[in-house]
Image (cartoon, rainbow, N blue to C red; front, side, top):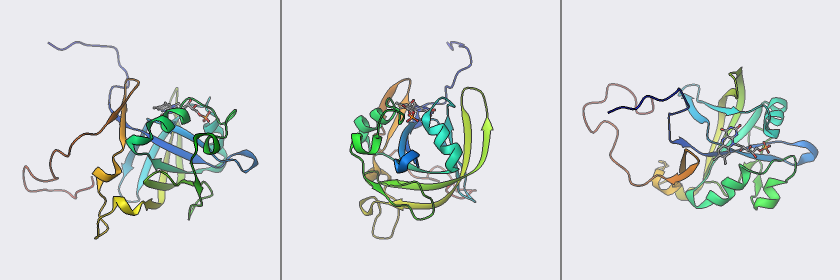
Length: 191
Ligand SMILES: Cc1cc2nc3c(=O)[nH]c(=O)nc-3n(C[C@H](O)[C@H](O)[C@H](O)COP(=O)(O)O)c2cc1C
């Protein structure tokens, strides 16, 4: 039997990402986000949703660009800290122990310890309610060499990122199969 409940953000789990953005006095900030997703293949675009009360909201509004860093499951403690501390009181790069690396297309730094770093420029901003949605174009991507095979293909299992649902962090488990295994594909692999 199905149990009907009131409408809620039930599309779970979601990815967990660390958004880095330039801050005041040359101190960049980091915010943990679970409301993030891929929204367009070409031009490549992603979305992040940030509450106006966050310090990072102020910073993204000013900079109009940021980096989305994909953490490894092993970095769950650092991810949690970046999601409970505010940059108003903490220098999260220094106190969490992350290294800021220069990006190539934006002023925000990459988090060196994250295996995937996605440089973004904001193209649209929508006020939705509790959150503002930023739709941003991906202008550069970076991968740790250990998450690419010899032909440059991304090894998802090596990234070993995490997911978030109902206040819990989860690892991703095993690969289930491959795209198109059930029938002849009609569409390109990436949406
Ligand atoms: C797992 C996790 C996911 C989160 N997802 C979001 C999110 O999608 N949007 C948001 O505005 N805040 C989110 N938060 C809360 C912010 O990360 C948190 O309020 C943070 O301290 C804000 O930092 P800042 O004030 O330096 O911007 C999340 C926190 C955690 C721990």
